[in-house]
Image (cartoon, rainbow, N blue to C red; front, side, top):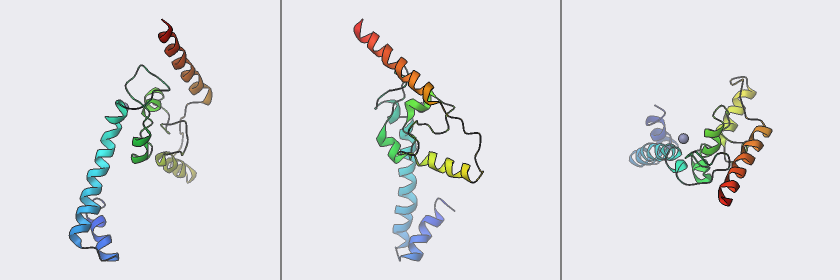
Length: 138
Ligand SMILES: [Zn+2]
């Protein structure tokens, strides 16, 4: 219903789009696009981007993926601090998923959100930086 029927019927009904166009653009194209964006989280974000939290893992921070995947591209952070519900230290910046969870928490629908402390993040970044510098000088 939410994947094919409503995205096809709404444009057809409310702004006189042809049913064929509404189906192929609003249902099929949207589904293909969003699936490929979701796949990019575990492919593109494991190849291209920077590694400010842990350089020894494959996952990276990729702003392009974060934008299209509404926040899931902060993948180096996510793999470094997997218990953090936000998947980022940046709050709502390019991260609508965190905004959604926070709104749910405001209404009591989400609770016990775990997050890495600022100090923990700072120490991890510093450790990552030091090991990078040490490696460069040896
Ligand atoms: Zn991953």
